Image (cartoon, rainbow, N blue to C red; front, side, top):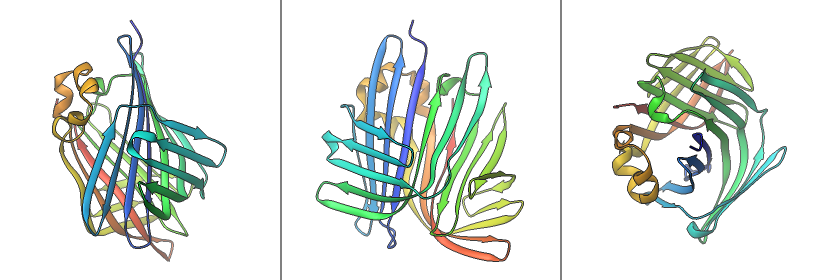
Length: 257
């Protein structure tokens, strides 16, 4: 039996006006199957739109650059690192682990989606799981990232039978005191979110899996009960007397398994 392996990439871009592109791509190996998945979510003045594919995608990673092409979705992009990377094993047991590789807490980005091009600041990370998501000791996960020309912030707040909370502020790990949809409080900084735009809300069985029938067929039905809410917000980060304004992408995920 093939061991479980999921390598999931997340990359985003927000323009100065707030137009947003979020790209996901993943490779899954399990039970003798090897599947690819990619998707793009766009948000702007005309609303929110998303498309997915299970066709191949191309991903190239260099020291300070990530290039991606989703041929079937007519999407391509380039992420140039503008902040130091950070890597951590978030969870580990005899059954498997979760490794978070925040390659670009801050990026300068150029993304083309069809005939449209977005240029702005962004973020890129890679999550590697060797334990199936439905076996994770989790009840709720809050995740997010803030990017401005001056500062970067990313956070993870994992709650359940296993719990861990931390943030990475300008490349350094720091204590996460509290996290909500409106505010992130660190030991030395506070991020406030306002004017939030909902990007996606609902259970995976209704939002993600219908666009990936081969994936839905392979995974347990219970996985469809995982519920996600994601927003794009304007953010104000106050840190040691300095105020920085930028864009926030943040989410809360409930494991209703």
